[in-house]
Amino acid sequence: MLNSGCWHPKIKEEFLTCSNDGTVRTWDLNSEKKHKAVFKPRSQTGKRVTPTCCTYSRDGKLIAAGCQDGTIQIWDRNLSVHTKFHCRQAHTMGSDTSCLTFSYDGTTLASRGGDDTLKTWDIRNFKKPLNVATGLTSFFPMTDCCFSPDDKLLVTGTSVRKGDGNGKLVFFDRGTFQKVYEIEVTNSSVVRCLWHPKLNQIMVGTGDGLARVYYDPVKSQRGAKLCVVKSQRKQKQAETLTQDYIITPHALPMFREARQRSTRKQLEKDRLDPMKSHKPEPPVSGPGRGGRVAAHGGTLSSYIVKNIALDKTDDSNPREAILRHAKEASENPYWVAPAYKQTQPEPVFAEEESEDEEADKEPEWKKRKI
Image (cartoon, rainbow, N blue to C red; front, side, top):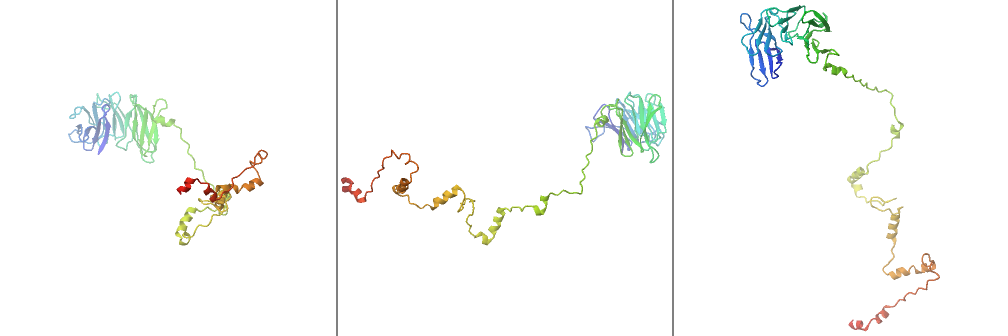
């Protein structure tokens, strides 16, 4: 089981892990199946011990690990055999050291122990701690501690049992190690905390499953401030429907108009009926429709068609057709005759000749030829 891990501060492809197999390993993202280097913490008698936390120094040259036997062991990143710094009784033996972190100037190491203590160490004189704070209850093997971005403060979280109070964030002055300030977060334990160096905001994870962010309106940059600036949208309340319904009179069944049935569907049904399908079409009554003309239509076209169909006069002889109207024209002149009545001469029409007379008038050569 992996106990801790972190990224290299300078090399983006490298990260560090420690696990229950008693090793601290560095890995490269480009080679997934093989570790880069292995560091094996040992007890005073040379036996294997389990590392519970690990970290890089700020420049990435040192690797530190806190172990279950209460020791803190530091290696040079390029030399994985022997430790460079080693403190045998950093914390109580058998307590899990939950966090190690280096200051930004790289000279101080802070350790959060499972023995409810917070200690700072000078790696140049690693035999005894610089400062010790006690009474910081911790129930979790991953309780954090971290330095402020200006390296002047050190913060850690405390744990509480259910109903015994509130979990707190406790701030210490790095130089004097006096408690400067404390924040009651919630009625649950503070498990993890992180002070972001660029945003200058503190992210806190608590035992009730929530994450909280603390920031200064003046000193913080972006991050949570981007969310706070946005105004909360007003929730639109759903309009409740009243029990009184408004019914228009024409919506009632008694006022509804009968729907016009489709003639196309009716014709399709009639085609299936053997009696109706053989029935001849009745004569058109009223105005014509469907290309058929009514017998007594009311339009001009129907009147003309009707008269043309009833006119049975024979116009094969044009002379007779014209002279048929001569008597009526002489008795009741209407158009041309009244205008030229005084100056119009008497019309003279050719007399009808019999067929025999026409035959006699033919030339002799035609007669001979015939």
